[in-house]
Length: 286
Figure (cartoon, rainbow, N blue to C red):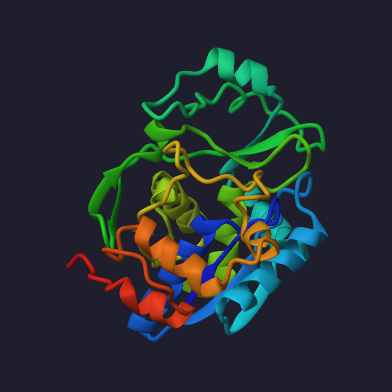
């Protein structure tokens, strides 16, 4: 069994990433799974080689270890193969809707996400470089279980509508790339932040269309926030792990403070990576 830790190199790691890496390690140990470090550089407009090197260096400095590694920019043939498969099944279509048009003409769900209504579904536009590619999201209930949060019944058609697999810049989207990679890399256990939980039903639907018979197990862990209550951002170098390293803060201090902020520890104590992972005390939802 494999799980994965999958940061995107659009900035340096921050404490939220480290908390996720701790959960990946703890749950991998619980299941006896191996860990793949997957660099998710599908967004080539923002990915930088310096961030890729920094991710590896900071993870090693913290004490995180992995068994295998991959990078999405080397998987182009994989994505082309799967897209052709969906084309042959008539499960995708080309779309020329601009971002502005999409926001102005489609409803939003409760979280502010656009529910694309299929404006281009029957227009038979060419699969050209100028057009995005959208998945014909099935209008059906997806049943799935989260190992922490329990049972879900969700209809991705109502959550997001026909979502993009490739954007108008020719870049593969997160939703498509991770599903293809999880399938091909035999990822049977997905551990990630609960902010990504809403992606699960649509990813299961897409994986089924690609031919995956059994979806992976899912565990969506809680998040930590900055002092203002917002989700941590990669854009603040001072708050990045690299920035904290440059300031002379030890990995044991960082890990102890992360566990304290995540209410894993009642009060601060310095911890090694292995000690911090053990402190999580994973309890799975039966």
